[in-house]
Amino acid sequence: MSLKALGLIEAIGLATAIAAADAAAKSANVEILGYEKVNGGGRISVKLLGDVGAVKAALAAAAMVGSQVGKIEATQLIARPHDEIEALIRTVDRGRRQEPAALPDKPKLHEAESNAETVSPEAAPENKLSKTTKNETGGAGYPKGRK
Image: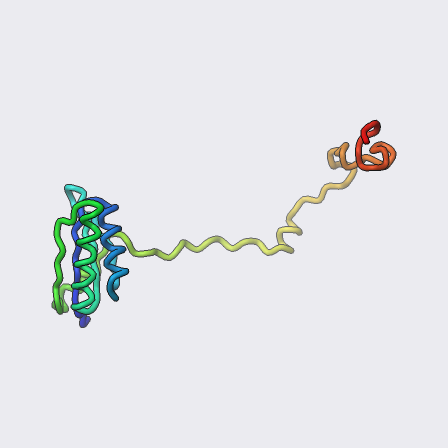
């Protein structure tokens, strides 16, 4: 796998974790893998990948901003993690954008028109507003007696 560095942020509360991850992403060239809810105490772990210097800067920014929002329990930098822990690193409980489910195909316009019921004018309900004549409206579009 050839990872250069792994960064871990453990925050208490989702708002703190999101603020810390936002600061980390904005401060350095790192990839946020996602976050995992750790059992107990509202702890949330955020995983970062990148160069050693970038991850170190991202963790420092995350710790500073996260501590202003809530509590950062710990940050950890692992330089050059071993290849055998790739599965552990890539396992993410939440936080990755998933592709939206495929929507069913919409019927084409000509198919929808051919499937629509046709109603004859005799069977259609009478609309009194649409059948007004010029004489009924007084010639100006208003009912008789109104000018």
